[in-house]
Length: 134
Ligand SMILES: [Zn+2]
Image (cartoon, rainbow, N blue to C red):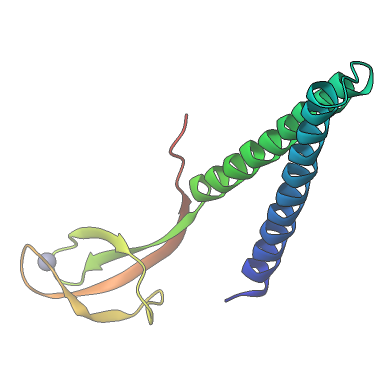
């Protein structure tokens, strides 16, 4: 796990914890409001507590929504590395996902030209951002 992934996981855990705490406090307020109105016939503080609880749940929902959006955006921006190969014999061009050990100028032992069966040379290595959403 990389440092960046650890930081991201830490941020997620922190937000998840905040989410749980806000939800619990909100539920406690809703219970308090409900109890105040029904059992103590307190119609001044009761509705106020209830409102606080509902607002808290709304905030918790918003955080959860933002978190899921953040995760979706991260996946959308995921970069993929590609290797561009060219046949040393006939010049046939091929693109595939980057594999460990690829470097520009290398004659790949694992790639054979689909046209003539000769070896293929790595011409370029590049990243491309995958955008799922327009
Ligand atoms: Zn070829």
